[in-house]
Length: 247
Ligand SMILES: NC(=O)c1ccc[n+]([C@@H]2O[C@H](COP(=O)([O-])OP(=O)(O)OC[C@H]3O[C@@H](n4cnc5c(N)ncnc54)[C@H](OP(=O)(O)O)[C@@H]3O)[C@@H](O)[C@H]2O)c1
Image (cartoon, rainbow, N blue to C red):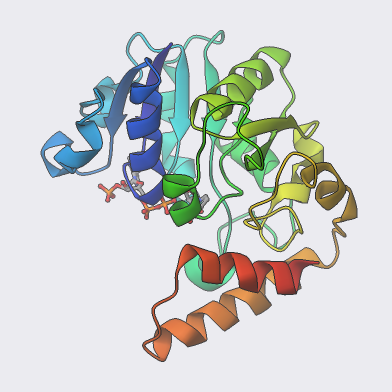
């Protein structure tokens, strides 16, 4: 597929590497221009472009930017044909992102994103720590392959997102509509806890909406305190903290 990735950070860079390696035609952009994109993320074939050129001719746009950047993206997204799929990877961390206008703590984040962009999205790749995403993908059929939830309202968006998640080395699970996607937000048992397809449905079902903002903040504070103390925090450390906090 012809894919544009907006955001070349921790998640966008791995998306660019993996989706180009899987044979897709991939462009990637950030806010500062193609010369600032790390050439190492282009080695499997992705092309670095200006953000204004990213949406030309693509079938799929993946937004992988801080949630606070979302309101400014509508003019770019409006240039996409309605047939194109938009897949969003974002999460809201008030302790990191500050207060975002009109996004209440505990709100369904993907529905807020739909309002900002003015079109439907699929929510995918939001629920894996960057370090796990970069290193823990495996071939289809591998035992104990990790799985990621995909939520969307349009069937075409969901089908595309499920397929592309598999292309990045993970099983994909249909987690329902965007209204249900709070079950894969920070603070929920399925969020960044490295689960297999056997465990993921139960983890999504076990989420309690009123609990997740507080648990998200507890885990964030725990990890933040370790970083402040000078401890190196690995992806596995984050998964361990999340598993202990979000159950
Ligand atoms: N890190 C994780 O473990 C993780 C896991 C799952 C989901 N997520 C979510 O995925 C999203 C991306 O996370 P990340 O960790 O990859 O972030 P990141 O490392 O901070 O990278 C963000 C990227 O977005 C670009 N960007 C920001 N504003 C932009 C704009 N207006 N137009 C174009 N590009 C823009 C930045 O480009 P410039 O540097 O040029 O501004 C940068 O390349 C976030 O919503 C995050 O919550 C993160």
